[in-house]
Length: 41
Image (tube, rainbow, N blue to C red; front, side, top):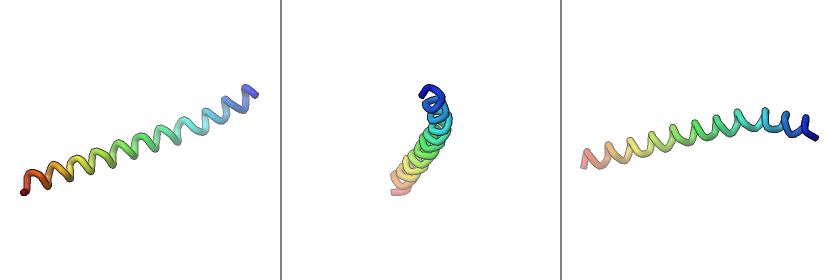
């Protein structure tokens, strides 16, 4: 049981961190896009 949970966490942790990193990058891109639109108008 413990080994299965350890294996599961080892598999899931990098996936979650990648998703969080990608999500934050997308959020920053959108915020920069909004800022550039605000400056242009």
